[in-house]
Image (cartoon, rainbow, N blue to C red):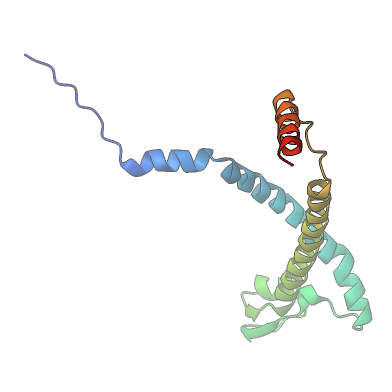
Length: 152
Protein backbone atom coordinates (compact mmCIF):
# COMPACT_ATOMS: atom_id res chain seq x y z
CA UNK A 1 0.00 0.00 0.00
CA UNK A 2 1.30 3.33 -0.90
CA UNK A 3 0.63 6.21 1.36
CA UNK A 4 -0.29 9.43 -0.32
CA UNK A 5 0.09 12.57 1.68
CA UNK A 6 -2.56 15.08 1.04
CA UNK A 7 -1.28 18.56 1.33
CA UNK A 8 -3.80 20.95 2.77
CA UNK A 9 -4.46 23.62 0.20
CA UNK A 10 -4.46 27.13 1.59
CA UNK A 11 -6.14 29.83 -0.44
CA UNK A 12 -3.92 32.49 -1.95
CA UNK A 13 -5.51 35.24 0.08
CA UNK A 14 -4.18 33.73 3.33
CA UNK A 15 -0.59 34.70 2.55
CA UNK A 16 -1.74 38.12 1.35
CA UNK A 17 -3.61 38.57 4.63
CA UNK A 18 -0.53 37.56 6.62
CA UNK A 19 1.58 40.11 4.74
CA UNK A 20 -1.09 42.77 5.30
CA UNK A 21 -1.30 42.12 9.04
CA UNK A 22 2.46 42.18 9.49
CA UNK A 23 2.92 45.53 7.80
CA UNK A 24 4.01 48.23 10.21
CA UNK A 25 1.18 50.66 9.54
CA UNK A 26 -1.47 48.03 10.43
CA UNK A 27 0.20 47.48 13.78
CA UNK A 28 0.42 51.24 14.28
CA UNK A 29 -3.29 51.48 13.53
CA UNK A 30 -4.07 48.77 16.09
CA UNK A 31 -2.08 50.65 18.74
CA UNK A 32 -3.88 53.86 17.77
CA UNK A 33 -7.29 52.21 18.18
CA UNK A 34 -6.40 50.94 21.65
CA UNK A 35 -5.07 54.32 22.73
CA UNK A 36 -8.09 56.02 21.16
CA UNK A 37 -10.45 53.83 23.14
CA UNK A 38 -8.66 54.72 26.38
CA UNK A 39 -8.64 58.39 25.43
CA UNK A 40 -12.33 58.19 24.60
CA UNK A 41 -13.07 57.06 28.16
CA UNK A 42 -11.19 60.08 29.51
CA UNK A 43 -13.02 62.46 27.20
CA UNK A 44 -16.34 60.82 28.08
CA UNK A 45 -15.73 61.44 31.74
CA UNK A 46 -14.61 65.03 31.07
CA UNK A 47 -17.81 65.72 29.13
CA UNK A 48 -20.15 63.95 31.53
CA UNK A 49 -18.55 64.97 34.82
CA UNK A 50 -17.01 68.37 34.06
CA UNK A 51 -18.41 70.06 30.95
CA UNK A 52 -22.06 69.02 31.11
CA UNK A 53 -22.62 70.42 34.62
CA UNK A 54 -21.22 73.80 33.53
CA UNK A 55 -23.35 73.82 30.39
CA UNK A 56 -26.34 72.84 32.53
CA UNK A 57 -25.59 75.71 34.89
CA UNK A 58 -25.41 78.18 31.99
CA UNK A 59 -28.66 76.86 30.49
CA UNK A 60 -30.54 77.09 33.78
CA UNK A 61 -29.95 73.66 35.25
CA UNK A 62 -30.73 71.53 32.22
CA UNK A 63 -29.16 68.10 32.65
CA UNK A 64 -28.44 66.89 29.13
CA UNK A 65 -28.30 63.26 30.19
CA UNK A 66 -31.96 63.54 31.25
CA UNK A 67 -33.10 65.36 28.14
CA UNK A 68 -35.36 62.84 26.40
CA UNK A 69 -38.74 62.45 24.76
CA UNK A 70 -41.05 59.60 25.74
CA UNK A 71 -42.65 58.04 22.66
CA UNK A 72 -44.52 55.22 24.37
CA UNK A 73 -44.97 54.20 27.96
CA UNK A 74 -45.08 56.02 31.28
CA UNK A 75 -43.68 59.55 31.41
CA UNK A 76 -40.98 59.81 34.09
CA UNK A 77 -38.73 62.60 35.35
CA UNK A 78 -35.40 60.95 34.55
CA UNK A 79 -34.18 58.79 31.72
CA UNK A 80 -33.18 56.01 34.11
CA UNK A 81 -36.68 55.88 35.58
CA UNK A 82 -38.27 55.88 32.11
CA UNK A 83 -36.02 53.07 30.91
CA UNK A 84 -36.65 51.09 34.09
CA UNK A 85 -40.41 51.46 33.51
CA UNK A 86 -39.96 50.15 29.95
CA UNK A 87 -40.79 53.40 28.17
CA UNK A 88 -39.65 53.94 24.58
CA UNK A 89 -37.58 57.13 24.56
CA UNK A 90 -35.64 59.35 22.18
CA UNK A 91 -32.50 60.19 24.16
CA UNK A 92 -31.59 63.66 22.92
CA UNK A 93 -29.28 64.38 25.86
CA UNK A 94 -27.25 61.21 25.38
CA UNK A 95 -26.83 62.14 21.73
CA UNK A 96 -25.77 65.70 22.62
CA UNK A 97 -23.18 64.31 25.05
CA UNK A 98 -21.84 62.06 22.28
CA UNK A 99 -21.61 65.05 19.90
CA UNK A 100 -19.76 67.09 22.53
CA UNK A 101 -17.36 64.18 23.13
CA UNK A 102 -16.73 63.86 19.41
CA UNK A 103 -16.02 67.58 19.05
CA UNK A 104 -13.57 67.49 21.96
CA UNK A 105 -11.75 64.47 20.54
CA UNK A 106 -11.68 66.03 17.06
CA UNK A 107 -10.39 69.33 18.48
CA UNK A 108 -7.66 67.55 20.45
CA UNK A 109 -6.60 65.42 17.47
CA UNK A 110 -6.58 68.51 15.23
CA UNK A 111 -4.20 70.35 17.54
CA UNK A 112 -2.06 67.27 18.15
CA UNK A 113 -1.59 66.62 14.42
CA UNK A 114 -0.97 70.29 13.78
CA UNK A 115 1.76 70.46 16.44
CA UNK A 116 3.37 67.21 15.26
CA UNK A 117 3.24 68.45 11.66
CA UNK A 118 5.02 71.67 12.60
CA UNK A 119 7.66 69.76 14.56
CA UNK A 120 8.18 67.44 11.60
CA UNK A 121 8.52 70.40 9.20
CA UNK A 122 11.12 72.03 11.46
CA UNK A 123 13.18 68.84 11.50
CA UNK A 124 12.96 68.52 7.72
CA UNK A 125 13.73 72.21 7.16
CA UNK A 126 17.05 72.06 8.99
CA UNK A 127 19.54 72.25 6.11
CA UNK A 128 22.29 69.70 6.14
CA UNK A 129 25.79 70.80 5.27
CA UNK A 130 26.82 69.41 1.91
CA UNK A 131 29.31 66.59 2.23
CA UNK A 132 32.95 67.43 1.67
CA UNK A 133 34.16 66.59 -1.83
CA UNK A 134 36.04 63.33 -2.21
CA UNK A 135 39.69 63.20 -3.22
CA UNK A 136 38.67 62.20 -6.73
CA UNK A 137 36.31 65.18 -7.04
CA UNK A 138 39.04 67.57 -5.85
CA UNK A 139 41.51 66.09 -8.34
CA UNK A 140 38.99 66.28 -11.20
CA UNK A 141 38.20 69.89 -10.32
CA UNK A 142 41.90 70.77 -10.42
CA UNK A 143 42.31 69.02 -13.79
CA UNK A 144 39.27 70.86 -15.19
CA UNK A 145 40.62 74.20 -14.00
CA UNK A 146 44.08 73.51 -15.49
CA UNK A 147 42.53 72.53 -18.83
CA UNK A 148 40.40 75.68 -18.80
CA UNK A 149 43.51 77.83 -18.18
CA UNK A 150 45.44 76.06 -20.94
CA UNK A 151 42.64 76.52 -23.48
CA UNK A 152 42.09 80.20 -22.75
